[in-house]
Length: 192
Image (cartoon, rainbow, N blue to C red):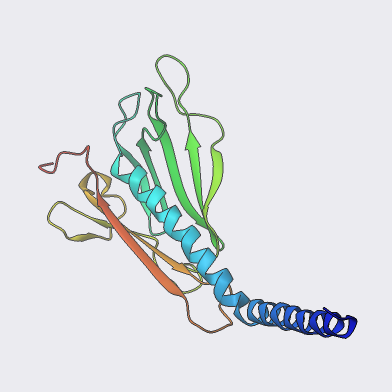
């Protein structure tokens, strides 16, 4: 290979690499919103899966308290054993704060077990727009499949639907995505 052929080969290779790098950068600049939105949706899907699995396992507390402590449109407190190899039942608290769904977990202590102290709080799903678009996160149903709108009727709940509206930037298009899942409370007798 001659010197001129080598210089031409290096020039063509360099031009091809610059074109490739420019194309990749252009793609990431123009598609960054879509990539971020897809990541937020994947995170919310995982969060909903975690929520539904723990809600499904709602059970009587280690001290015998009823499985559901309190409920509202964007807040749910119940008892469930979500930790493997742990014989005690935890108090689980799902709630929406701004644009984030949070999970609070409280371990019982003492004998007899009592639930007091601070919750161990983690983020379940970010970029949640439920409050901004007036969408309820939790919808409750009785054993007949009728929607419960009186949140004082805790003992009637047999089925819970979870709705999460995800949008990393409500001011940008495309519009938000709504994710839904639901579950029956396995450990409650449906005849009650």
